[in-house]
Image (cartoon, rainbow, N blue to C red; front, top):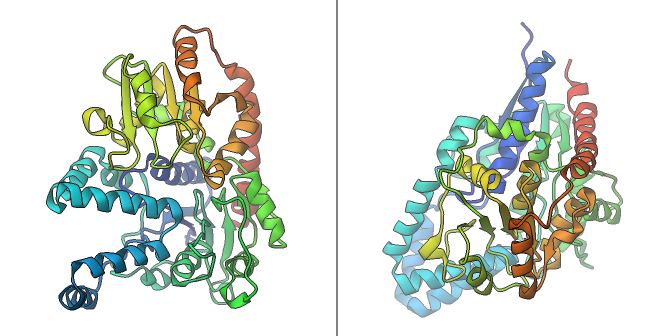
Length: 435
């Protein structure tokens, strides 16, 4: 029997508390595998299981840490550590890092570490990935090992913000190179492997990529060269198409992979809510125009569940009321609540899929808001955006009293047309090359 064609997916899967991340990875693989089975295609789908952000620390780094602490003291060590985080992390990730660092100092490292471990244990992301995503069990200590451990006939990069190559000074540094080489598939030598390189709903997570006079330090030039080697490109936002055009490249805007599956597909794996709930609040760490504490002062009058995508105390209600669902329970909470309030792209996506009335809290960052613009425009739900605390009480009352309703039939019609573009893209650029 002829060896099956291997489709290798390169996307996020490693975050232990981001529901959108793990569910988009699940959805793309689930859709590809279902299509392969339905059409009798001789292929298999595998996802590379590695994070270029969390490579294990080498022992020599530990010795450097001890040396700096002994020679310069703890204050200098903390300053160097902060500078390193500032240089290597994106803006939102750095803000997250600072919050975690402050909490560690306030609460004591051991307590905070135990708190994180407890959350990871409750959310059971590892169990979900192992049960639902075909991950290659790489036995490597450094992410560089993917070059030798993964081989595929067709590589798919995406979805999610895999091409967010932001840096503090907009200069192509080692951190950007490390990330971009992986997610822009630079490691795939097409002349040797004869492999096909495609992206599905990849996101830059930015409004634009800045240029640099020195081409050797230009992130924009690096992205242009890397993406020029792709056989076909699709992105998640209309702004992504415009970024590609600024690079002299072409691409199409398609639906996030979570939308390739139907409500019924998710109902096969979700866990129903065991309690009646009015409002499901799901928050990312990103800052919104509406203060979270002020928001919760209004929401606490109702039956509510609160989930923070990151295990920090972003508002005073987090420690008191936070709900730590598994991915299956999270899906159940979206479906079974009377309404949803979120600042998350995937929170809005799943509310649409589940036909749950929702409102989106506008993020302060224009870069972060970009990912919502296309979704709300395509679905005709631009009016579901909250920017002022004075709006909150009225929209909650109107939704719970059924005075504010969404024409889901109209929304589904628009979304289905958008999703079909994605399915056509995958058929043309992936399945058509499998004999």
